[in-house]
Length: 269
Image (tube, rainbow, N blue to C red; front, side):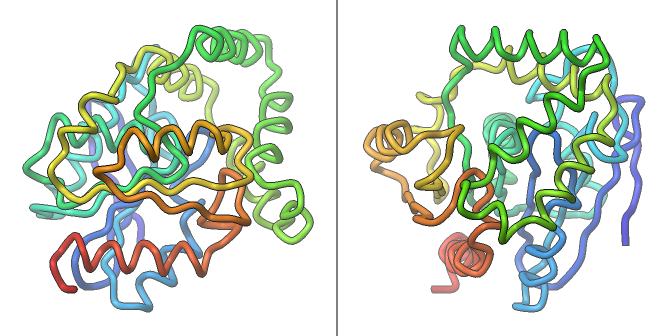
């Protein structure tokens, strides 16, 4: 059952279901908490408590202003946790959600039990990436959101998984098309201006797990390998048959990985 809370003058929609140690799932760019529906359902059946939310500017959560910094989005997460009286949780961030998870870890370290970057990195945007985000903003303003969506969503899946994942590709496409233009622009601006978190990630003392897809066209294998070497103090898992959407493309394996990590984080193994 979804709930609503006010944050910084906007509404944030969220859900908190199941029993056990809390796992917070943060969705990515052009997604909403609905992207986690099947994943969440299975985690709950395995005895986990799962919290999801529509990050401001996505899903049914409103946007506030022209730029949503990652700290602003992390504040929305904290507001939900305060409302649900969650003292510590395992934070799992997919893509943009990983940027939010890193911001949350910086601002609210006392609430972080563990951190999972799921198809995400601590790297800042390159100049090329910033220019691409500016182009997306101009396309949105020109009423060409569909052009962005029809490119971004299929590219997030490994080519060989597109046919098998047709239903989820269609759902993700609809999710993206329903995202308000103002929210997309605010979050693009926020991602573009986010800081470099590489040095910070080296200092995180809570358990950290990075999950990459061997067939990811957004975080290519060379970058994933470089990150795994740079952060050898943390754990890395490669999903061999996934693109950028491993929790869909290799759902069963991903659930196993997160479940095992949850046990490590909360000291039950």
